Length: 112
Image (cartoon, rainbow, N blue to C red; front, side, top):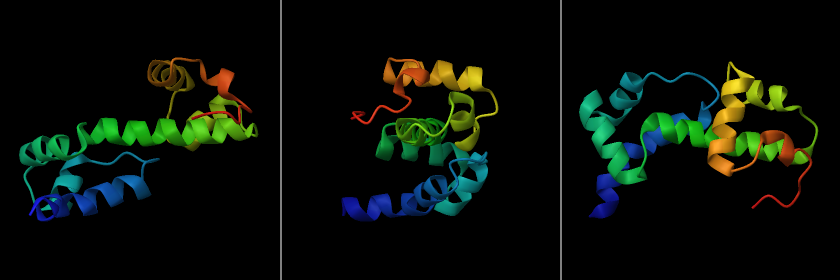
């Protein structure tokens, strides 16, 4: 039964995962789940424990961390690659999430 409750989220989660680099209107995500925007927000948070925007931001930051760990991109390049428009905002959010400046993760193969 719980599995059926989560099925409406397969489409929006797949959309966010496939398009995390671009701005995604919540109304489009809600429509893909067949819900109103307010119902979608509430139910998405129940299923994922986060908002759609935070879920997308987390995916961006995780991908940026992966890219930085390979050592082939600068912090600015990684920020732009994952969809940030401002390297400063990216660095602030990265530091908040991971507890280190993004430059400290460049070439770090030991990222958990």
